[in-house]
Length: 137
Image (cartoon, rainbow, N blue to C red):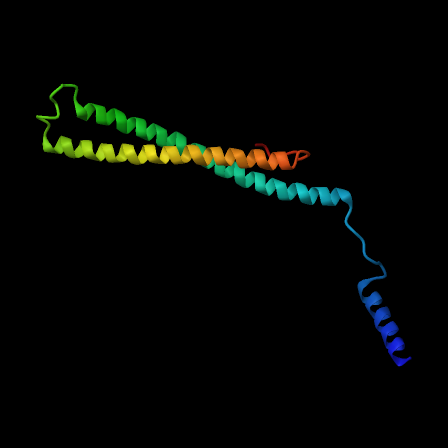
């Protein structure tokens, strides 16, 4: 009997401290807003990564084209140009070749990354068909 009295008293004490309300779930509107905020953060991260990769690709492509043009100037246009080229020109040609190959390698990597980011964006949008972006894409 004493245990029932203590349990009832503890229950009343907790109700008084926490309020008289029982469990209440959030409203559907608030749930939808929370879900939208989660998807917004994912989409924003994908968009940021996609724009960064596209910017890097654009800038790197311009720089590789510039190096190709400079290499063409130092390469010469004679059929036996490589036979009588000076050592300094050979050195510059080797540097240009290394820069060009590194740039082209990175451009290939960026093409793959951009495709992956676009796929991720499409996957998120296909999994959440009712999603409406609150930020401009």
